Image (tube, rainbow, N blue to C red; front, side, top):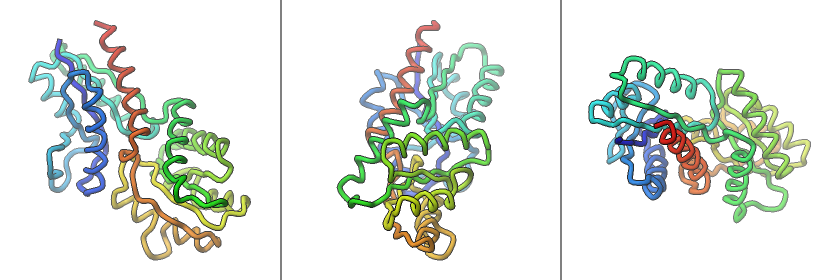
Length: 265
């Protein structure tokens, strides 16, 4: 039996993305149980390949390559926040790959980051602690996710917002696409009397899309929208992959999937 670990993410080529991937691999190496770690991309390659040691391969090709190299068991750990469209596409890719394989490859998929209420609470505590040194009395914390065009994902984000606010009445979550949106978050902040808010991405990496949505100049960013609502915004442009405690939640899901796969053989 030859077992491998395959992290799956929607990756770009920005320095911020590669920093996040490297941080995940550093922690995963300590818990890899001697298994080789590979990287898969959820989208076909577009543009130049990332420079450096981590070079994600399109997921179907990565699985085919691992099967050719004699891997019999593969655990895929997606680095998604919720089980939205990308997560379901990943599951379909795995199903199709196993259907067309030689029958020698067994694949298990770990849960996304926020798989249950306990995960929500762990991540929320870690992110609240992360800003405790710069957060002044009365400051809000706003976590901003990509969101999804998949409306079922809205339910998971709304649950995240509810858990976060139940832990800290001046902590909120919003989505660039989907619900809760920027108008919802501004309204909640105004109701709470917030005058300054710390903004952090609820994404693996603080890549260019996240940076533009949070803090770009002009009228379309969250910073601008908050300012129009009388709230000063302070962006902290670091992704979840740079927070060791948050990454440990993904790795716990990986370990659960690995144990389940081993028990089936």
